[in-house]
Image (cartoon, rainbow over all chains, first blue to last red; front, side, top):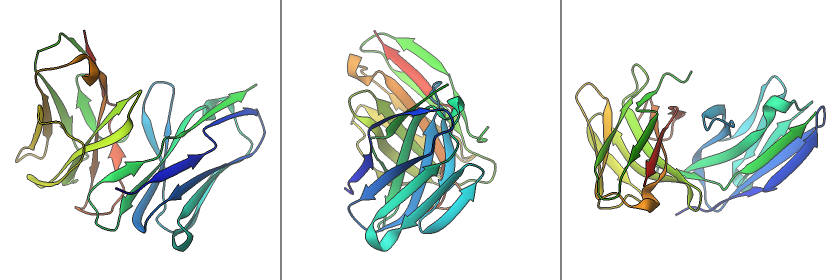
Length: 109
Length: 113
């Protein structure tokens, strides 16, 4: 199956700092999503972004499908941003998501 | 709230037992996906149903089975449970069969003792 690598694996930020999370994937994809898993385990949709750039408040994401990577930007981080961020891709054959191993983010006040 | 519901939220059972997890997709969604999240394996795709038909299988054990009913809700059946089956089981739904945004339910936390 398709390989999905996320970096960095762990990140500790001071409140108010900015960060960039990266997702590399090994094959062409036609679906890519970013999720935030909060401390209660819930998976929250952040972006559906198979290509291009999207912004939602303090968060934005860019996917360059031809170069097989996606970036998630978090600006002015808040303690509520803590949790694990997952990238998931659906390969060209469709029908199933492959998840990366996640980036664990801790924002300290 | 994603609109996807899962029951129960928590389940504690003994080895060798059988359990059924239930998922109701968002209104209008035809696709249901099941995922398992364990500490050592991460998030893994199990199975995908579209409008009652199985569309794709991932790393689903033979002891596990699923189905999607005419009202589009889905059930994941886990039998002959082992300690290693303890995990968070997620259901997700999407509108279309292929390559579309998936919305995840809150999960069912299964503990096998």
